[in-house]
Image 1 (tube, helix red, strand yellow):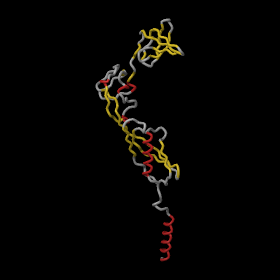
Image 2: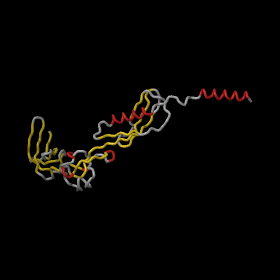
Image 3: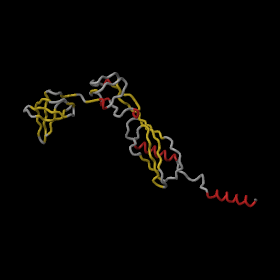
Image 4: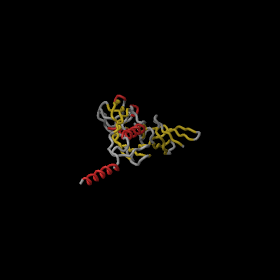
Length: 231
């Protein structure tokens, strides 16, 4: 019995001696989070406004030490609101983890100062800038007064609501049947004449015009209402 107990003790001690150490080196998770944060700051440096980046906790796992970390954005992901950044080990081990990241952007947006009706041409008194969280708003919100004043609303807006690019259109400068001035120009020449617009058009749009000689030509509406025809 004494021999058996002694043998058992030897076997137990010998078995423990070959088990891996519970204190074996592991990857520093703080370094992974730092790699994700640095990458997020680099990728959002172009954004206007005050950018705030919050890196979340990483799902705990045993990772072998890595000598070179590489952060990347998963396919189809976007650093806007709640997202994830991948961090892979490119030297020293083989693993990839995903780090939750929240990107918030505070910036001025244009809001209506009063109820605005569809078809209304905006003035500076109709809008004002108000700081808002861009990641919580629809895409295409307007951030400068200059981008809205003079434009025409295609839909009504409630007071305090932000304005979007798809709500606005350029005002009609040329209307069907209106007499217009044609400016035809090409290599080494420029000629002005009169014509009659065959369609409506805003600045930058193409319209058809019937010239004085009866010919129908296409030209681009200029900010002053003239029609420019290129040859």
